[in-house]
Structure formats: C-alpha cells, structure tokens
Image 1 (cartoon, rainbow, N blue to C red):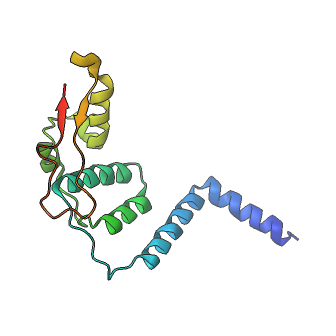
Image 2: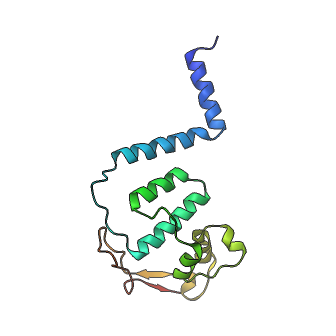
Image 3: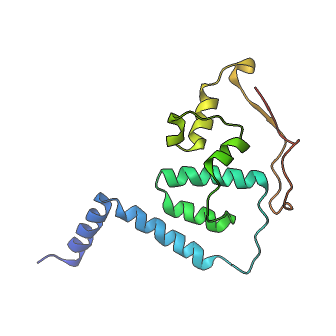
Length: 150
C-alpha cells in the first residue's frame, strides 16, 4: 500500500506532466486576487493609449494560453470584456497586416518590426515624453508628448 507521501508525489507528478499544476496555481492566484480586490474602490478611467496597450497585452496573453493572467489583466485594468476588433486596433496603431501576420498577436509584429528595422540612427527609435500618470483624467492622452523618430 502506498504511503500518503508517495500518493502526494504521484499526484503532483501527474498534474505536472499534464501541465495542470501550473494552471491550478495560476487559477488560485487569480481567485485570491479577485477575493482581495476592493470592488468599492473606483478605478481610474482608461486613457486611449492604455486601452490599446492593454489590448495588445491581452491578445498576447490569450494567444499564449495565459488565460488566468489575461483574466487578472481584464479585472485589474477595467478592460472591456469584449476585446477591441483587431482591425480597429491595427488601424489605430497604423499597422498594415498581410495574411500571415493575422495568425499571431499584433505585439509580435510590432516587436519584430523594431528588432529587424534598420535605418537612420542605426535602427534606434527615440522616445520622448511620458505616459499619462496613474489616475489621469479620461481622455488625457500622450498625443504630442511622445515622438518616435525612425
């Protein structure tokens, strides 16, 4: 007859080999976060830029099957339950996609673009300005405060 310790080890190994253990840990973290989250405390309004950034991150998390991380992002950020239309997001970012790029998150394409770009300034991108402060009023955008130089 197996001891309790042997049984625990067998269950743990089985859960690990099936990839379930990490999912369970992530689910527990998400549930603990949800239980501790103070729903009575109002969240700051999402700026347009934060909405787009959160959408890019959410799309990446979902693509990589980080579902619990994605659910925490949605809950914590106040991101809408229904994601933005991908074409709308691409248009907002002035991204033109080909058929092959639509199978991966937009974030991959953006990162790939910057990793593989070469041009003036040795391919470096200069960012100036700051992001809106936490709790910035709705509609407060970074427009005019950030400049990307090719």
